Length: 330
Image (cartoon, rainbow, N blue to C red; front, side):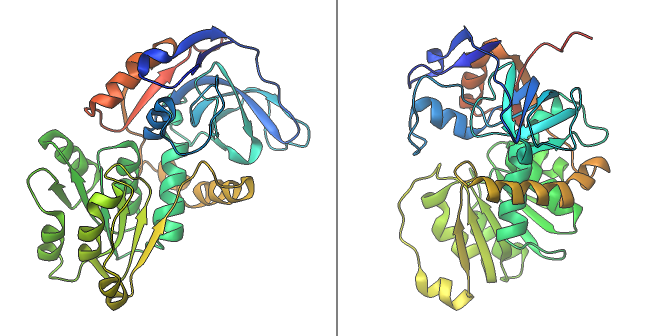
């Protein structure tokens, strides 16, 4: 098979296009003949060597993909060769064949194209585990999504609206603000021109929001606390705005607020299996009904991972960027 290899850390030019052995399914695993992989911000960090998790090189990176089942390992039930699926993996998605634990493989939702399904696993698992599980977002509450035009942000807006939540979202350009509204945001906030904490205070009559999904970390922490309602929950999934900050504990205590910091990739297999089960139960029906749809910005051939990473680094995308493989011969 062909695969995109990361032989050393650096810029997008470090990727190599090589022949590699096709992986085999061990007990409890499934091998997919890949149709597409989706890029995530963590891919950029991995490539740069700044992700914070030790990595041996060379390696095949990539966290999610879609394709058809090519091999089913011993002990795996419910899957047959040829089934369409998408998967969450710890590595290896930038390849024509991808091996995944069976518990981390999901059926493609009814009505969703196999190519587009590659954009679902990481966003769906991140949103379910952080917004609905840890954040305990309930119908009738309110949610603030930072980076509402991104792959995770666009999914979070749609998922929250599907259960009857008032949604605020931040973005940086007029086009991205409009896309947030298109996804269902009740109020799109320009982080370039507005103070989101002041907007939340005005829009909620001083009450604040119940849950905040944050990808910025230190840069937004003070304003996130200020924007939070009593008994509110901040779920921090990224540190794009810095890793170190001071926190107003008195304000947190007065609001009975909670702050969660999480990551998905380094969770143990049993925790990931629980998340995937929650996604299948709680979110897949909304995809089948079209209340949630994958948002695809553009696709690049798998061999053009360098160009795809450069495009992602430009910050101009909305939703997901895909790396595509040729369709299997019929």
